[in-house]
Image (cartoon, rainbow over all chains, first blue to last red; front, side):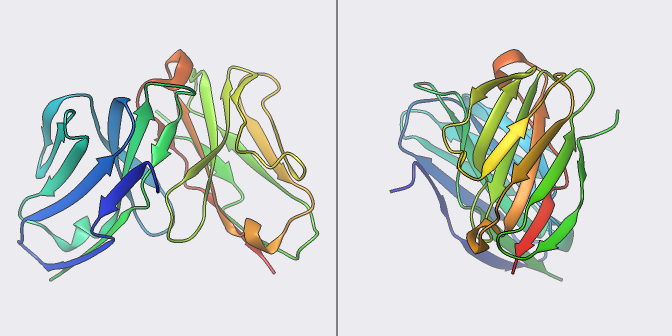
Length: 110
Length: 115
């Protein structure tokens, strides 16, 4: 079983819809990252969270440490939001490398 | 501020050939990472450098993969000989804090196809 699981794996929605992508993890962490990857491979860091909630424009990320769960929300979705969204966690124990989820492919249709 | 640079962007080779990738991190970033991302999966860490020392290479297939960061700045990743299953995007990332416990900045990646 992967230490980081994302759902759904694929999500297609219409422009303007409210989007939620979920991330569950099974290890103790010091931080959780949400990343965006566009076609062509480039990855951009969206958020780094260790508790609570962060907001940047139309993007909101929340984390519940007790439940080992995080969500990424997109309000008023737009076709340019189409990308793969990746959750990654930094473990407390052992090597402090990032462990990545498999990604959620989001497609927003106009 | 210039981002993380990688070259080449694309490479096609035949199995058993050798290939090398280059990465130039953001100026002043102490920590450099090489990741392998197979299609449909999240990135997997191959090796992490802190300045010119190796912090973690536990998932690097050392029989065929090697990496160096001689002067603590740019880095090369080599595969010799390549196998079909090495087809992937190779991502380089850097971060400013020692130990890398902050935001990582990713390069555009090198897409390797092994035929």
